[in-house]
Length: 550
Image 1 (cartoon, one colour):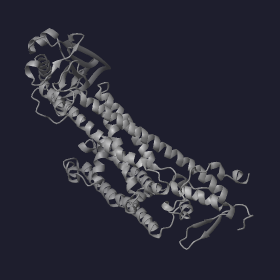
Image 2 (cartoon, helix red, strand yellow):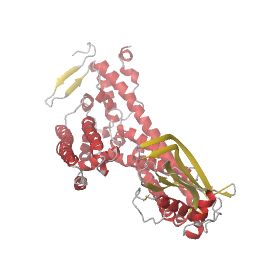
Image 3 (cartoon, one colour):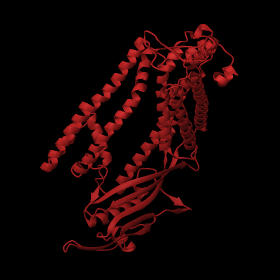
Image 4 (cartoon, one colour):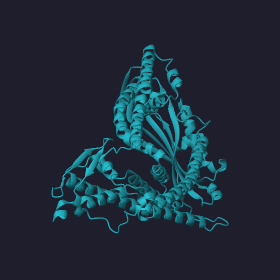
């Protein structure tokens, strides 16, 4: 190729079978400069420091973030644990107080079977509520609204009209549902007989759908004092439900509890000045600031990578008349920076919610837990990026990245078979087996079987069923376990193993696996050579033919 010829692509095969790129002599300096710029872009922070003396601010900031976000999560987790424990223990207290002869039954197993038991339990709840402060060992009190006690409400839902005669196998029913409520204030004192006489409370069990008892109580969570936190005030909105919607002769009884947490109106803790609360607010603000700076730096790096991608595309087309492949273009988009951006966004949102919870403006503990927990998980996952700077760790990251597309395609195919088994098991075995009663239970049960959990118990529960269902269950379970454990999982592992061997082979041969890597590999300058020192990056327009030839 002579100097007077126009730019063309020259490809020669080396012994190791990758591309070697050449360019005209007049353009060689520009090509080498751009190649050096690309190599610098893909250096790790330590190499960039050797090349230009740039301090790895993002690396230091990520290390700081790991420390402060983990400390923040542990602090919030301990506080959240106390809150959840307090709520659960109070719910158990309400069940023992208001459900007659409650003995820590399994959830959903407390039920009534006679009319007398239903009336007796309703009056039992009312009397317990009226005499609550003389019975409970807790700091419970009645809720007041505008200086008046809130009443206990007994509401029944029933069909508007119905005439049911099983003897003659006839019925006439109006499906519209009516609701009737009775209110009882805590200062009224009654026994069971006077309650029935005074309120004229009667139930038509043939039309009855449910009886719901609503009551409101409040208390203070004092256990936080021992952990140097100010106690919160709690409002409990309790609902006791007698469910007769199935009309099967069994009325299921359950207690539900909704909680509102707020700052107590007047408080005083000896020796406490609220200093810990201010320190926590300051610490959360520091987390928000660190994540915001990290968000800006990583966003800038992503934008720079996208800009360099367009420049490389123009350069490659102008010099070699070749289109850059999509996989090469995606090399410029650093997925780790995307991960950090998502993590920072979640951390900022979670920290803002945490500040709102500490100042008692918000009570979204669950949302805050999800945001902070996910953010912390992503921060720790991001540590893998820095482990990838070491060769022995890098092969794991390359394997995961290379195998991911094939794994996703494989999982989509396997999911079709899995869903087929889920629907089949739900329809056929659902009426006979607790683990297949609902669709979500089926998915959980089958996933456990894939991992070898609880196999014998799943087989055992089908022994006493009809012969046809028993036989089908054996064919169903044996075929599912054999297919997924011995075939699907083996193929899944083989996909990853094959990708690992391919990556290992490329690393041993040191052969570039893409055109981008082959182009960069032509640059032999080491980071400490001093040839990367430059004041400004070349403008992208200088890579186009119009800029070079005027």
